[in-house]
Image 1 (tube, rainbow, N blue to C red):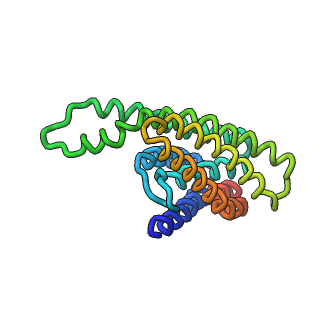
Image 2 (tube, rainbow, N blue to C red):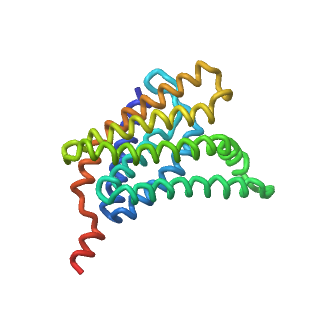
Image 3 (cartoon, one colour):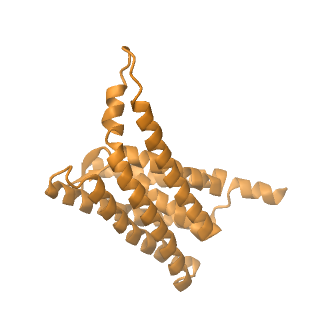
Length: 232
């Protein structure tokens, strides 16, 4: 039960940090969160864990939080700002991949102890990153489009949970299918790949539902920077 309880706490911790970033820095904080969480999630995904009786990859709660961030941006600042965050996350991941591949080519000093560990993590990253880049770009854009469409059908503030979960659960299904197919199919035996696909989507589903109350909190938050602008 340790991984399940620790994972629950970690997901809540991520959402709290997201709200702190938003409260402190406004929509700039959400942009920063999308960039940082996208990079960290794609590093964490190289680690597999056992959770709810299945093999899963790490990084699901961090990655799922980026969808909540873009939904908050869409809800409070509009579709254009949400799409800007999507491209920012995509660019951040691309820069990380390219710079780390260059970095790995440097010949390590005799005293170096990090090269092997970096190769273990970032040597896997190109295939994972290609999968992530494709899945991220498609899924996030679908999320923004579906969220905007649902807002026209369910416009009330109390219906935010429909917009948030409806868009996220559909886009996360697409994201999980694309990512696991490119990143892990052929790397793991088929039965393990199926487990990773199912467990990854189930975890994203759970995290998405958990994130909904934090979305309502964000709707009520007035960031410090916006208070300062109105005061001046």
